[in-house]
Length: 388
View (spheres, rainbow, N blue to C red):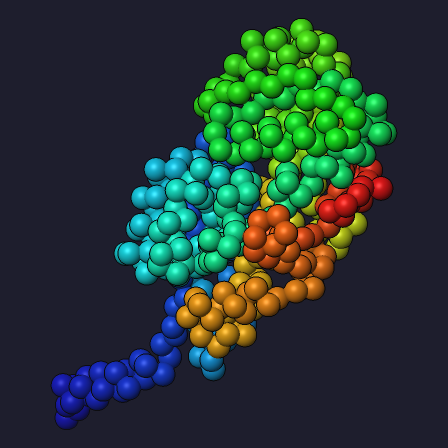
């Protein structure tokens, strides 16, 4: 007679022996990003970038770290574009989820609010935040894989003023750290290019009625409206309401790629002829393939910031592999040492020491595009010194 008790015991023993052989270590990547509200398109693009980069390494059996394979798991929380929500989420990631690597936050105020936590605890953070205060010698664990207005505004605005003859520009900015910094950067850039940021209006991010602000700006005789600094949905509302008020001038977005989202809010007709910053060249086959993956998995058009965070996530994974450990002190050194990296956006290099005090700002190609029929058509190719 078969002794079922003995068989069960033997099977359990075999499973106990087999368990450790098949177990795989998990490397958690935190994501504190805006997943609801006006900045959701940016936050989703950043999160999806990290997830797609994780899919790459997991499909190959995991991330090789010192001869051990790690499954990469992305743990995400919505900060709702609010600094206090970001702090709560980062505390949870660091102290409960034991995360040592972080994608986000989106906003500058949120990034500044969480950096004391991430820096004190040796958490490597890759943030979108545009303020120059986000990175520097005093923040050795913080990197920025995307270009900001500080990098892109002058060459773009020089080109726009020269080729389109813009003289007086009006702009609406969110009344926070991001908006105030971008306003200061743009005011200097337009003045240096021989134009003028003649009208500035600040508003709370939740605002949707821009008519009074636009009316005041138009009364000052502006010939262009600048959208940089505004979340994608808000920018779409500004374009729509400006055209409804009868504004016929040029509309410019010199930073913050988000053309699909703006077009979806405002429509093809009123966005026709806009000049926009973009990190994506439609002729780039690698970005096209990434965009198709993005669309297939998430059923959404790719946000323009997403490729930068895909490249940034892959650079982070390379640094962990090179360091041969998950010790963030060693990973940080390995990440700083990655230069001339061949990402989907092109050749990427860490730069910024002269401006920020640390080479933690990415340098990457970027472009000026004209919106035609709801699509971007490249009009100029740019480096950090010039567009042509």
